Amino acid sequence: MNYIIIDSCVWINYFRNKINFKEISQLLIDNLVLTNKIILSELIPSAMVNKEYDFIDCLSGIDIVPLDIDWDEIIGIQYQCIKTGINKLGLLDIVIAQNAKQNNIEIFSTDKHMILLSNKMGINCRIK
Image (cartoon, rainbow, N blue to C red; front, side, top):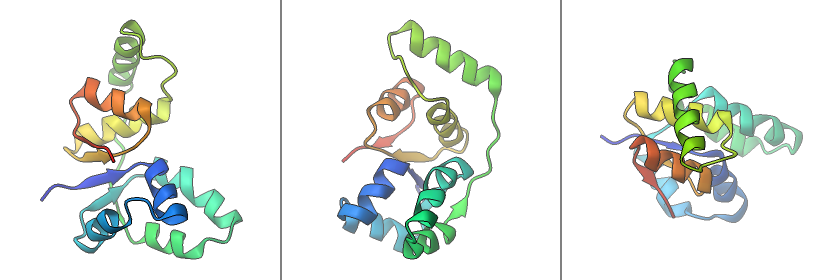
């Protein structure tokens, strides 16, 4: 079974614009989607303000992968990225990528920084 973490940008497009709707819906039906507290923290506050309760309900039904942040690895990843010209990476993106790698989970993202980071770290990244 190949689990997947769906990045915040993909969730937003899924609910607002129905982009990748069939694929993500099938992943949800197959119970292959996981999340972490960072992604939930990025999404839920805005959804609460906008009263997007269906979105919040959907997210609350997804299993959460615990974060085990290895700060030395984070520093090393950031160093390697800056050294090779991958600049302006968000720290949260690096932690999300580290979380996926630690748990052998694929990332579904359309964010160019996450895609570059996934390639650099050897993480499978589903791009649509």
